[in-house]
Image (cartoon, rainbow, N blue to C red; front, side, top):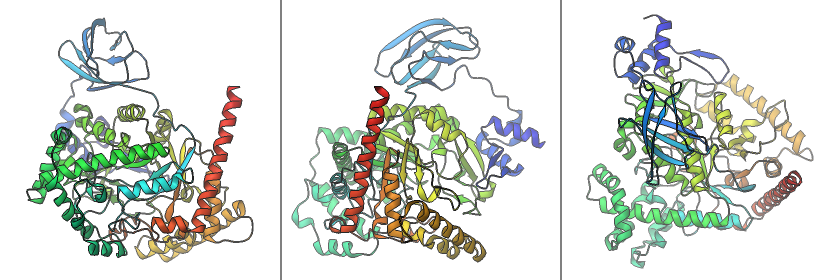
Length: 627
């Protein structure tokens, strides 16, 4: 088959034939990669796919209606249509209308929601009537980043729990902060520490249950010696924490008296509980129903308490799910077979990355009316005041790697971004949840444009933005600003170039490259000192303070402080590609120690004061404009 014909065929299946890499160079997909992708997308050989002529559909399975415009529905093969509209609230509308230039226009605007339009008693489309923009923050605020497994206090069992999360929120509220950001807290297998490989995006991880608040708990259930041992381990021992918590939770589950509220919950969660029991090969469905029921209760309580304190919880929506987990099994029909999501080679990962989970099938997920995606988003926004969408580019396209292939054999496959954004804006507005897109690194130009159009906040990260030879740009107003992220080295490690040495050790950088990186880092340090530090000092703590002051005084709507930076931590929470150094690091200081630390109190007090000043200045500017 001619290359030009192959490329045309690929585009028919939403496969991109080229992309711009991290260095700005245009990379063409190989012929072999296009053939493999076409065969995965079509379910047939590339020759048969080329012979197949797709019959135009009467109506697409999903139609988006933005704002309060009259719905316009593309129809093929109709000049006049009888239509019936089932609104989400249970009411009905119907009528007849001419189809003009292939478009049926309904006479009235729709309330926001998910509605079903039936054409000529035979063809259906899901009408998503969505607000143009996601919910916006009420005012400028700030908070802290605290992965819950790492956060701890004197009452913790070797890993933080929801009681700790509430305690951290209360502590930050003392400084007029309104946000506690954390990593995904979703259901996980016992041997999987990564928060980005959940069993499900619909259920929570019982590891984070505050056992001490369970009404079924009895004093004799607690093994204080075992708890003390878990508290003293240098890193999170997931197996030991789970073992001790499960011992106690099984006792609580055995005492639990089922009630009507539980029965309603169990009707929804029974399939999940049965799945976990089959995986464990134990009669444990009742246990999983109990822990999920109590986890759902505690999550609601913590989310409501956090909202009362300020903007609320800042949760993280992971890009994918564990391929052996509940979602991948229960909703297998919306996931693509024989491929995994990853990333093409770049300057950091020269061989590319394979993240090991299946992507949505672009056609199947639309045919299913995005039921699973809607449910997963709703599970998060109903608890979060702010929701971060991991790898927001995934709303537009994902890099598909064929099973058994190399990351260099992958291609980008496109999705219906407008439909995914419509679900996000609708659920965001319904639940009063701000949506943030993780847009770091190299992303196509349409991504920031789409985020701006629909009110998704962008991320501003100092360690990404600082350049050796230019002033640090100011954070945009519609952004979440921070020094770093969980995938980056803490500030003290970055400041001293420890991350460069780590890349040499991992084989990602040779000595010549390391010298070049260290020289560039030295220039960055000097640029920061010149711009922000009053005096010749180049100490990491001083540089951190002035940069946090810069962020707190900025127009950014939300500022996040990485707690580990406040005591000069040098080990990262996540070292991509090094699982033994990822997701197990406890905070060096417990909550009580942080409260007592004068240096930490000083930094947070300064951040709080500068945020308050920025808020007052913003309110004054708004008053002048309105006046």
